[in-house]
Image 1 (spheres, helix red, strand yellow):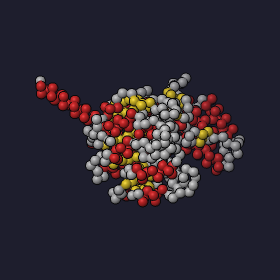
Image 2: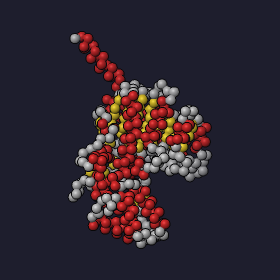
Image 3: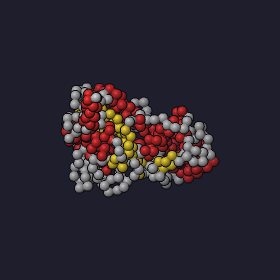
Image 4: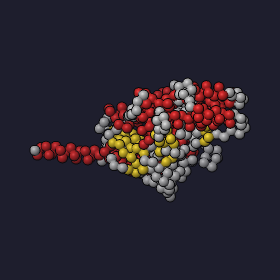
Length: 469
């Protein structure tokens, strides 16, 4: 009996010590704009589209044993922006909207990534958008305004992290006050970073590099990777970035690592109220999480994976309607609405503004499944036809529908309204909301994430799990 008690006591103590930390390997995934409904809708969409049934096909991360929620308000607003939320998730401190790694007095805050580096871990900060964007930069930079892209980039080598990755850099040689400045890439190289442009270039250079920056190939959009729904064969992906980060951070390293991975374009798609594109982005981040989960399975007692979001975007609702919810209708959308809009603009230019309704119908059939896969109600066709008539009668005065990251031709904007109505989806805003965001965790120290939290609690608990000081 005494032996049993001693064994149980040891087990309890061991669990307590383990909970206080020693997660050697930490993955911190942030789905920008990914509220609870984005996760639920993606899982319901997958079941309807792939198996023609009501229910869910669960994402990998939604099956983690610890499931929770967190509040997201900033220091100066009930609805946060990505900079304040990113800073909260990075440093455990509230700040004002637009702040990057600084407090309300604009003084630098220490991020969990900086704590991990100080504790002897290798550190990676990665994203599907630009490396100098709000969420990733909150982990390494300290600037009063998120739009200070050049100044944020100059903070990158100062943090001295081991691996950075993303689309590229938005202002590589122009300061916040629009002055020409020395290019950032020679500055990175002088600081000891090897810059790889594309996945193949990374594989060629990684073995000899001491510190690495992985961005897209020359000529690609530095602002972001391609949307998953628009992806071409050789495009850099978030899964490849995650694989590359693991490979690089484990090279000649016995002390472990901290890796932040942002799925940044969930937010962009939700700003545009583009449901199919958003669901593909959630699934795409889940694919990157599966890469981390495979690593976890090899090191289950030493690895912590935490998944959360900085805020919810769009106020998406699964509302059904007269015809019920038909999420599988979205599987016929083959491109993002932004790409559809670009194709309409291109057609407009090619035809010198003389585009027929039949040509527009063919394009909408190809990209959205209208008429070809989805029978069109009279009121839906009228919306599209009226938009066509109006937009192609105003050659010099076309009113585009603008969201934060996307401009849509009027017909593309109406196509969005039609597909959302067919699918039974509603959106309350083109901006952020103050809705709860989900928190998921598995592995070493994951029990620390039980109980409702504020976003500022998450990095503090990661630091505890990792033993960072």
